[in-house]
Image (tube, rainbow, N blue to C red):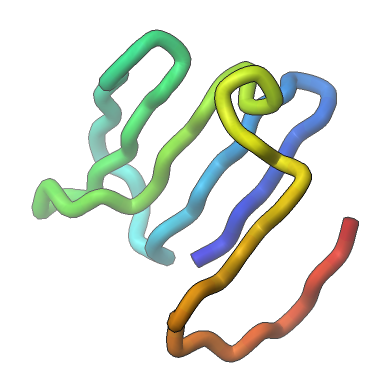
Length: 72
């Protein structure tokens, strides 16, 4: 999983898979979910992220992850 924030557009993309997106669906205004060829979610795009989310803190709780890099 990879979180990417783009300040120029105030959007956050949550990349859940390395699979290619084949279809997208806007679930709510400014929230688009990307799906692979099997209908599995591969990513979530959130426009105006700083107004919809609390971006000042990220907490990983009980996730079996290998933390590779943390940058601001």
